[in-house]
Structures are given as C-alpha cells and as structure tokens.
Length: 263
Image (tube, rainbow, N blue to C red):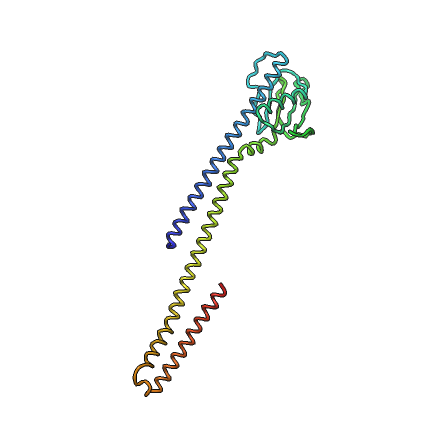
C-alpha cells in the first residue's frame, strides 16, 4: 500500500473519529438536558403535591396559581397559606420525593410573613440521621405577602449525572474504542516505516554485494582463459582484484551481521 493511500485512510479515519465524538457529545448533552428537565418536572410535581396535601389537611380550599417556582439553579420557592411545623413539612417533602424516587439531599427553609424572616432552616441528608443547619442555598429575596418555604437540592447535578449511566458508559466505551483504534493505526504506521527501512537496506546491500561478486566472477573467467598462464603479471593483477573484492564482500557481510544484531 502506498504512502498516499495510507494518508487518505488516516485522514478519513480522523474525520470519522471527529464525527463520532461530536455526535456523542451532542447526544450526551441532549440526554443530560432531557434528564435534567424530567427531574425538575418531578420535583415540581412533588412540591405541588406537598402544597395540596398541606391544604387538604388544614381544610384550605384556596386555589394557588403556580405555587412552586424555580427561583435559581436547583432552588425552589413554594407558596402556602399557613404557618408550618418544620418536622411536619420535612416529612411531607420526604414522602413526596420518595414517591417519585427522588432520593436527593435537600435543604429547606420556612419563611414567616408576620415577622418578615426565615424562622427555620435545615439540611436533610438522605440515608443518614444527622442533619446540619449550614446555609447551602443561595440568598433569596423573599416576598412578604404570604407564607413560603424554600427547598434547595445541592446534589441534584450529581444525581442527574448518575441517571445517565448508560450514556456515560457508552461514551467511555466509544472513547476506549477510539484509543485502541488509534493505537492500532500507530502500530501499523510503525510497521510500515520499519518495512520501508528494511526494503531500502536490502536493496542497498544487494547492490553492494552484487558489485564484488560480479567483479570476482569476471576475474575468475579471465583466469580460466587459455594462455593466461603465460602472463604471470595478468594473473597477479586479477588475483589482487579477486582478493580486494573478496575483502570488500567480507566487509559487507560483517556489516549485515552487525546491523542485524543491533536491531
């Protein structure tokens, strides 16, 4: 295979690799957006259910328009019409999240419109009994015309990524295949270069060996001619030629052996 053909194959393979990687990146990005949107939708449904359950338990029939609002990244504000007990609200949130298999860590805060302040904040860590009161959520501008509680999911991005195990696995597999293929191409190119070096060496050595062999053959033919014995000077001259070419031939053979041992 010629060098031009190999270069064409490498260029086409590189374009194919770039296309595959670009396509995979686009699909992974779209998959992340879809999973993220689905997760946020499930969270909104869960928080809306919390509001409805609170209203039902308190006998409140007021219709709240869009009580759940995404204020910032992973941070929700939920409107209600009454004061809440923290333990009661926490259990309601946990129940609705678990019903939708949203086993996320979260921080919730309760706002009281009468004294215009946040009256309670707690971070709930799933599968652990301990909880902290550190403020993980971003600062939020509260409205003072009603009761609110907020909820922040600090690990939601990680949870979304964990839902994309298939895409992450397929991307990793594709990357490994591309690395392996590039490794194979590199080996093929090295073997191609070694083969060219070997062929060049064989061609050069063939030429170097043929010259003394031809000279020795011609000198031998002259020495075998009738009447050569009557001309000792010619015999001595051709003998020196044969000896010289023999030494040259021997030198080339030793060179071949030396190069062969160093490979």
